[in-house]
Length: 514
Image (cartoon, rainbow, N blue to C red):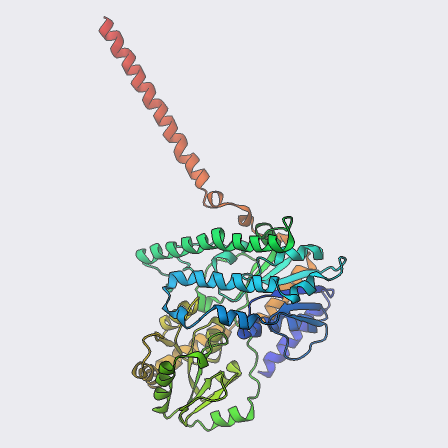
């Protein structure tokens, strides 16, 4: 671990001389504590390297950083928790959960657009210039038209999902549906005929919502706020110089990517920090092993129905293992003796503890990456969005078991826990997967910092852009060329056919006259 830290420092020092300090704006509208954990290392590191960084988001930095200014959007979490019932989302058919994903992204964008924090940013002096804008690939479409006033800076796009359809589009990366499953479809890269048919439906439905409902709604919100002359997303997306995606071929299947699509999966993971004393003591004393249970930062287990909470507590009470439960209230009525609750847990650091044997998770992508990185098998209870996809990828690799939230019982949970504890193949497979996941030339954070500064150095790096970004559907798939190739011979054959018919008709007429 010391060697890795030394290597990181050396690489960061090597970058220092080659990039002049820039003025960077980070527009991060997605309101999620875990998402903040993913994006924060990048903006903090850029500030530590001498860049002047302004961040507008729902979350302030926990500790001040020189050169970093936070503009915090207040009240966004309260609004979103009123608007969305994430537990109810688990009832939704996977295809139609796309509607909820897009609606969530629309809401976070509009809330930030109408916030006092955004007004504060837009009130910056007219001569304010930013050299680079870092923003999120989704949830920012109604915002980025406004950043043109800051000198029309190039954009680095961050995407917390793996590589959804809109990132394929903005990067120009080929989205080959025959072996690349849609980000919301639980299929592998080796699909049967019917899976490819289903994948096509997911792609078509996702693109329909995105192009004809989501983006028009974002454009309308932007026009209402800025006025009719604001550049719309269809124009601003061409300013995206580099797209950074939470993608790793070990988990997300290998496929060809363009040079402006940068994989930065697990950017938030660092060497484990010492645990708080109470957590360390709890885990150290777990002689039979420990289980971590967390539903992430958006799903609040305190909001679970009493029936579901009883299922969980009854199952945990029968285990000899200790259980750490991320629970957002001060107390848990009926809490078993072997269970410790906490409103917030340093998840990645806990997963690094040798006594943690099982991770019960909602299967969010950040949690999935942390489980792989730390080598801990997973019991996944997905709710919405990409969560069913993430857990299916782990199940297919023999490192996880999936449970359905609505059908969850004490018996099914105990069976899953005991299966993973007693079948060593789950842990062995996860250790192998972890070794592949970790084996990289650069850390994801080093890669993200390098390419952010690369865009700064090369004024938007237009040489990285694929011409595919400028082609429409007909041009991209050569439908016009294919039409030409097939229509010209068809036209010639038709002309020759009618010429022959006419000639034969004339000959028959002459014979009759004779």
